[in-house]
Length: 151
Image (tube, rainbow, N blue to C red; front, side, top):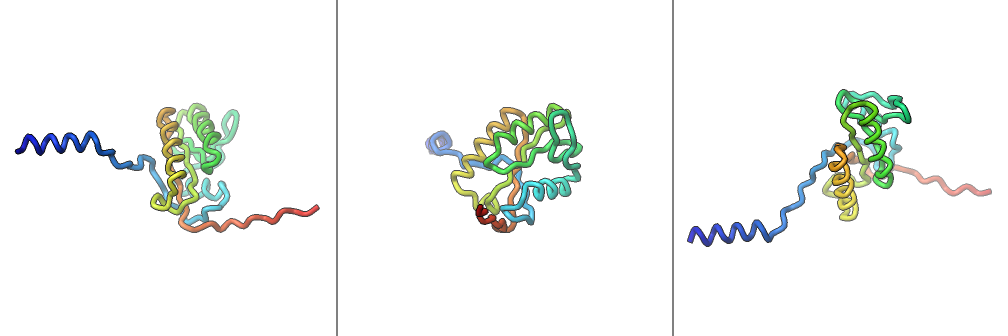
C-alpha cells in the first residue's frame, strides 16, 4: 500500500507542472504608473541610499549604490536597459541591475503578456548576470497626454 502511494506521489511530481514562482524582486512606490522615469529613478535612489546620474565613460548610471549600478527603464525599452546595465556593471565594477517600471499596480494585476515579457527579461538578465527588480506603482495612471499641436 505504501509503495503504491509513493509511486502516485512520484508520478504526480513528474507530470504536474510546478507553479511559477516569481523570481524577481519587486518594490512598490507611491508613484503614478505614467510618471516620468526620473521620478522612479529618484525614488529608488532615495530608498536604497544611492547616488543619481553618476558619470562614467560612455554615459551616466541612473542610480549607484554601494552594491549596484542600476538602469531604470520602462518595459518597452528593456533592450536598451539591459545593455546599459551590462555597461554600467563593467564600468563601475558593481553588480548590474535592471529596474523595470511596471504599468500594473502589483504582481497580482499583471496581465499575462506582461508577465511573459518580464519572465523573458528575467531569463536574459540571469544569463547575463544582471539582477532584475520590478518597480510597481501604487497609483493608477496620472499621466496627461498632450493634444496634438496644430500648425
